[in-house]
Length: 392
Image 1 (tube, one colour):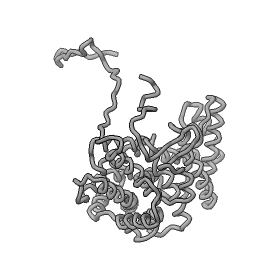
Image 2 (cartoon, one colour):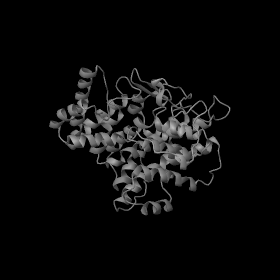
Image 3 (spheres, rainbow, N blue to C red):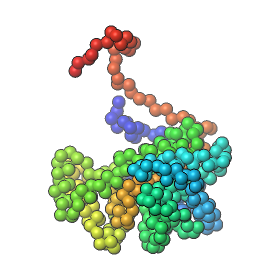
């Protein structure tokens, strides 16, 4: 098997109008719009609308979309009771995944497979996922669950439900930018998982539950948690040089460095680096300084010893940024989900209602079998009484 194709690398599996990545030039495009323009001019709500509906909204359309999000922010009381009965050690991503599955029980029109019904479900999930994440964080810490605001932005509402006090406009704007940056990234592992499940004609909640499961892995959405653990292990700026050298010389990996698609700077990383630097200055902490030094040393070492140029990805600076904002470290990946639900649901809808195909096509990749051969027709079954222990 061609090594380039392992893990479906470089294999084109579908058409999409949602997102384009130019890995050679470091450009990320949502529905034709450069991510840097969206960060500068847009909001998460407007970006979510763009991803779902394929075009930027009018003022009236955006106002209606925001109204629908606000109305859907609450989560069912029985779901809160379930959270209160869960072990406090439960991982936030596991809690989120199971709660998304539970939401299907409250969809009174679950059998409605129209595009309009799927749009409604997408809006419901965009609105409710922040409420689930914050409710669990408060429950596990013995705090009362905070009801969502009946006004305000998506990012401000999340921070309010997390802390119980309204955030500053500046802090809400920083998180809003983070949500825009994480909202979509083409056929990454979690998005592909969602689309594969959608191809079976499973409902939206099943598709998104699968995406959350894929995102939870440390090589995908969990990477920024690993970055923060690395920064904490380094501890102080004075320790960076020795720590990075030891890790690289021993063949270890520096989390947050390198990307499967980008061959130059990840445009999201540049924005997050600037935000991390700003928040670290305001909080007078060391995390940006450690991160920047780790980036520079890794780049220098790789170029000198491997002849490779390596760049930071979206996880490197989001770790220190969220930590500096006082967000619990194990909520980093759930925040990723809070943002990426806009992209996931857009892909599920595109998969189910693709214009290029008369009906959905079930994903069925082919594997190269390299297992045990016992002859041209395979192995001959031997009764257990006649089997002998194999020696190695």
